[in-house]
Image (tube, rainbow, N blue to C red; front, side):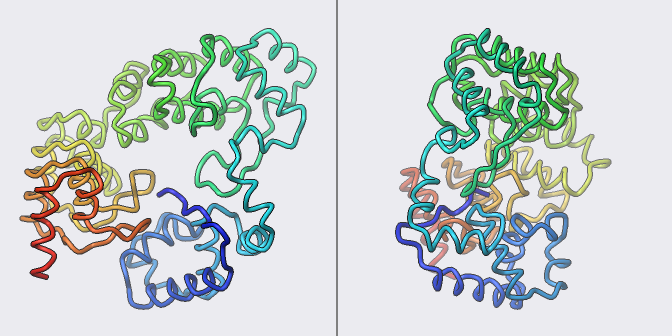
Length: 364
């Protein structure tokens, strides 16, 4: 789920109201409240809706969730930003401009310039640099990146990559970043739009896997972002074929075979894949197997929405109708902007589909 950026002139009292509202929604067993707590409260990440509802939620719990929903590690840190307009304005800058460590910043500048030799020498002078990370606030990913993670240009900082990005990445890999850094970078490279546009996705995947990055750590993220080029490249690098991957590739027969042994999480991921890409036959198989069309999508997979939102977004009327036939709730709201599936259809200009969904909304 994307974080909710602080609005201009943020108001702490308003944020306190949001925390109290979240606490009330939890008490009312609201699915949206459970999803938000699963996404942003560190103690709820692996819990089901029911397990979250059974928890006692204090105001501090709700405030922590709100803070992390806004991209801050704690309520006091969020409060500090709200009360200091200079800090609130600062986080709007591109990430590399926020790096205060001069040695780390120089390494990123060399990376961005494509200066492989300069970067190699810089890393020789500062061998611990490859294991360091920087901290960014106001975001839900790329919050504590190592130097290697900057090679993917994901999130977008400059909108471009140096022509020799693979050579530059190899320089950093030769310096020995740890496994977590390699795995995270692989996922960023597999899902980044700039790398895809520049033709760097597959070369970066091949390089990172050469240096031991685990393709299984990245393939679901790639599939959830619709990057089938990356999915196929990761399979070539030894990633396992799982139910979500088969769903993303629209392999209906393989989906049927893998269903029996798939975990609950894999089934949920597969449902998200089918709705976001638009695979009707795969969706039908999953719904017939008992998957719930009204669950919010899993963490990391547009988790602020339901499958119906995603089907409406891509304008797939047949998929929308299938979901509705199987009990999808046309009135459910996304957790970022509070939009219904009809609102999502409108956003992408699917006028006829919007009208159809609006009519169902009115009927209740």
